[in-house]
Image (cartoon, rainbow over all chains, first blue to last red; front, side):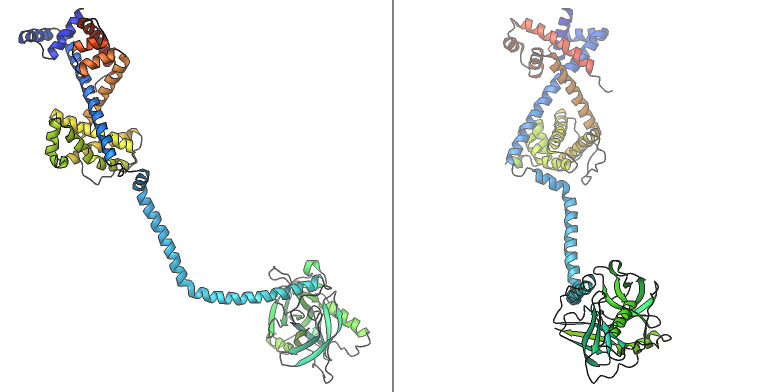
Length: 361
Length: 190
């Protein structure tokens, strides 16, 4: 009960409800009684804190109301999610946007800049493709000739290949797929000499055909500068060919890269000469100017793999041909006049004996 | 009309001293966008902006009411400085120091004010918790008497005590308990 009374007194003192006398007495008491002084201090702090808390709560409530009122007033203007997002990321967005704009216009500009050369390239490209399309047909024929000789190669109305003389009496050899299903065959060399020829023998297994000039007034091709090599050639030997993949004669050089041909065909060589359709039937000669093979085809979709029938089989055919009655004067050249000459000189001599074979059907 | 009334800082301060709620509301609405923008552009949310701004306004408001504010700058600058200080503190508590604060606007040193405010907040927090712990009817009784300043007779009627003495006795007991709880938890940082 004493404590209770003391509380009353303290509160009255703090609230200033004491009379002057009482106050003086109380203060005197506080000065002497340390415990009372502490109690007064604590009580004062407690009440002040409580009061402060009350005021703070009230103020908060007030501010809260003001805030709500403000939000109501400017509802449309309140920053929404997008606005916040924008405010936060506008720098990044700006950078991203400028980069993309830059790249878009940069691309447009550079495309514009490059339009001229690109157009030129396109023209060349189209040309090339046209050629490729033509090649495709001819190439199929080449492969067909190797794979399945019985199957007639699809051919345009006029087809061309290469052939070369095997004897001065007017005998010419070419690939049999070149002259397949031909109505009439013409040969023509670089010098412009043109002959009508007929097929007198064909060996479809080795893809070889022997043609003979059908002109009664024909005399001779002249002395052949090359000889035929009966033995097998060695790997890595330098070889070259002449042919008519286009209107003019084309020289191609490479080396003998394998002693077997397409899919292990031992009757052919693999050679690394870039060849095109039209080269079929062309002569394959070694460095010394010996005939070592007859160009027959190349592998589609593979770089640098072309094939040539070995000359041994050509000789075999010539032998067979000699046995038949209709061929009486086939003399195989015995002298090689190319062996010690440089390549251009060899070619000069050779080119008159290499013919473009034109097939009409 | 309303705006022209509180056009100057002096008018606003005068209004707050007179307990003019419109002055406070005007002040509040005037600078909220600025602080909101500041908080939002420094990795804060809308709610945090509101929170910090209200703290800032409370600091300012109470200093005006105490007559302890010697304003050497605009209200705007003062509020900005206080809120910036509070927000820095909040960010530090969240463990995000890395944020580069937007220092485009000037600010005045308000370290003392915010520290005093935080001390008070802490004190009030402890008091609030102590009152909660007290439970009913003690809490309401003390709040009615000491915070809402109701007289003893009203309280006696409200709580159904037989007479004011019983109420006073009850209040005394409650206060005694509150005192114990409060001083057990609250240690002022001196």
